[in-house]
Image 1 (cartoon, rainbow, N blue to C red):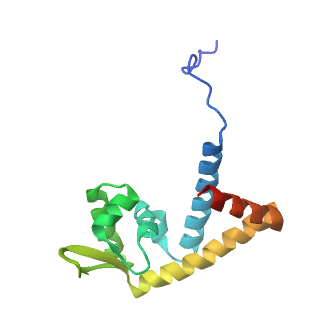
Image 2: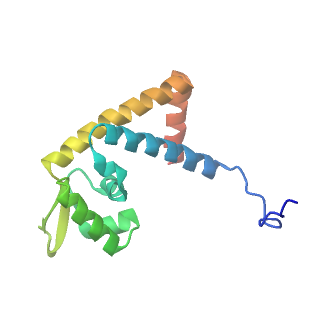
Length: 147
């Protein structure tokens, strides 16, 4: 005999644009992480790599990373400690606030960014081949319009 499902009586889960965008973002992120790992950047196998997207190329105040990433102050601190140990970022005194710190990329971190650009272009080319040039262009334009 089959046991009744536990979710009987719950509303149907809709197949909506949000879930499609989330799945597409997850696909992109998993391909990106795999490409970065294959390029020798094993930090992308760890959650701390997600913080890199919130660091501006000229540096970002550590306090601003908490707001941008929507992580706790403690999580950002731990991830920065690890990224600093990886040699990807460094923290310097904030010239506008002696108590604060600015996080910026090291030369090794700038190499990570350069390699990331290559991986991003490879993913875009795969997506372009799958969708065709015109549909890919339309997708990019549509996403820009939404954001």
